[in-house]
Length: 342
Figure 1 (cartoon, rainbow, N blue to C red):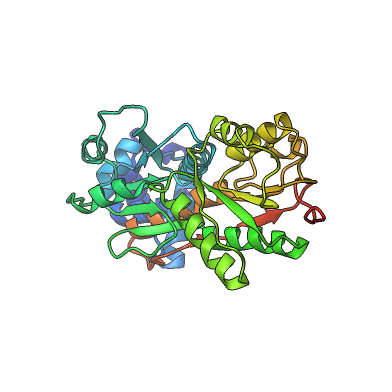
Figure 2: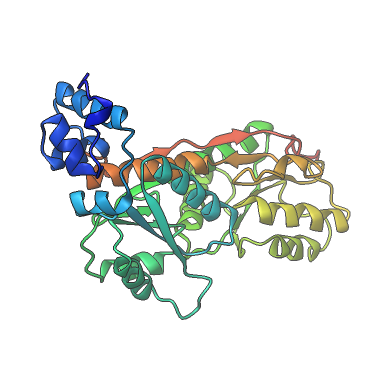
């Protein structure tokens, strides 16, 4: 312990005073407070002892001066109204706060005139240390490649990227689990209701679906492209004439699946007796569908946490993986069953 007496407590308590009492430089104190790995254990402990005895709480301004960083992460969300992007952003915000960072976000969909270039410019002007792009469209990622950005950039997407850091939920695994579940029940004719194919997650699920169908040697039928909304799912299902000739549907998100189940009900088509339905996301209310929805669970909180871990590693000069995937999980409920007898 440093053995600081009460009367020795400095009148002005800042990072330099902590450094003087610990016998180290102010940069060393800064590195300790920010969790930098390259600090000798005895030095780290000496600094932490002084911090504890003085009840020192560094403010963000002092930390920024010491580290040349603002402790702020900028986030661009292509659509903040969807459950997945909102949940990922929330997970990242919680992880950032626990690491001493704040988050400034902009939502592209909220402002039709906000281009990726303008969004990046706005966040860089705020002095962010790094950028994270959540729920990206392929057009947004293409635009980002043409912008000179001097801070680490992470894109939440599954595919490898030569330019950006990436993290994602494993879309291919989730799709494979959904298709394999339906096949295990005996389904051989499955329709895919996809999300908008400019969304990288929707495109990833669509490609994985076709790959898995081909691997099983199943019938390939044209997909239906939706817009993520329950209204689209309802309009599609309610507009059908009679019972579909396919026996199962893999729907790209739970909201569209909710609309599908509702539309089928209004047409007198029973789920799962006539058609089995699998969703994607595991929304909090998916277990309360009638029938409760079989779906693929994405851990958005873990996704946001992993994004923050990768960004911190980049900012602190530690080795980081170029790709980092969160496993998805199949949740089996009552919306799937063996196909009807023919």
